[in-house]
Image (cartoon, rainbow, N blue to C red; front, side, top):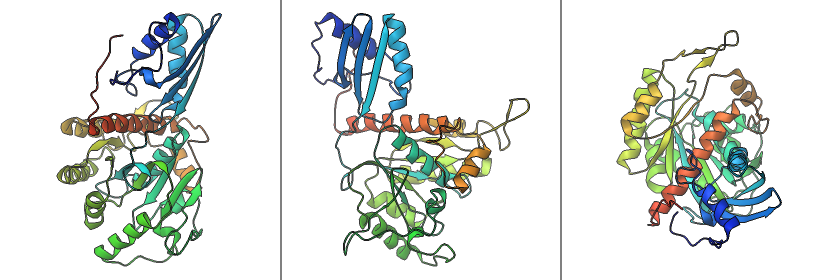
Length: 357
C-alpha cells in the first residue's frame, strides 16, 4: 500500500477478498501490487464478479492477465474493466510527464521507437503528444504519413498541433519543405526548438514524448537543462559502436541529473522465417550488459522486423493494427508509465509501504 485511505470497507468479506487478491498481484508492471484506492468497484452476483480498476498509469491491456489471475484464484467468472487516470502533477504547462527518447548516434531507430512508444501509450489509455526535436533531420512527418501537411495557427502566438492516430504532434518538418536543408548553427536551432515546444497549443496531455536528435550536443543540453523532463529513454543497437555512443548519452543525462527510465535495444535479433531461431546479427546481450552496468532497466529487446520498416514508410500505425511486433512497444510503454508513476510518488515524498493484507 502507498499509505492512502482505501475506498472500501475492508471488513466486508467480499471486498476484503478481492482487495487482498489484487494487493498480492505482482508483475514488472505492478511491482507493489494493485492498490486498494485503485479499486472502484467489486460486486459479486452469484458466481460472477464485476470489478472496476482505475490505474494511475497506462497499462489497460494488462486486463486479460489480471482477469485470468482473479478468475483462477476465485474459481469464479470475473468481468474486469480497467480505466486510466494519470494524476494531475503537471511538469510543464498542462503536460504531466515529458519523456525524452534519445540515442548516442543516428541510425539506431530512435525516431521509429519514439513514434511507436507514443502510439503504444495512447493505445493504453493515455493522452499523448509527440515533439520532433530533431531540427536537422525531422522524421516524425514521414513516420506518421504527414509529409507536406502544415499546422494551422490558433492565434498570433500559438500553433495547433498536427493530429494523427490520436497523437498531438509538432515538428520543424511541418514548417520547412522536406527537400530543404536546415542550415542553422546550434543556438538558432535551439531557439527554433524552444518555439516549437512553447508556441504549440498542446492542451492537457498525460505524456509528451520528445524525439531527441542523436548525440550529446547543444540542442540536447538545452532540452535537458531547460525542460522539466520526467526522464530519458536511451535507444541503442547491440553493436559495440552504438553501445559506446549510448554510454555517452547516459553520461550526459547523469551529469544534468535527469533520471534514466531505461534502455531499449533495437534491432536486437532477427527471427529466422525458416527455422524460427534467433539470429543476433549485430551482437548479443550488449544492451543488457550496458543496462546492468548503469543500474537501469532494459525495457525492451525489439527484433529486426520488416513490418516495422514497411509500415513506418507508409506512415501506418502498427500498434493499432495489432501486429505481433507491436507487443514489444506495448510492454515497453506500460513499463515506462508504471515507472514514472512510482517516480512521481517518490518526488512528492509519498511513503511507499508494501502491505501484507
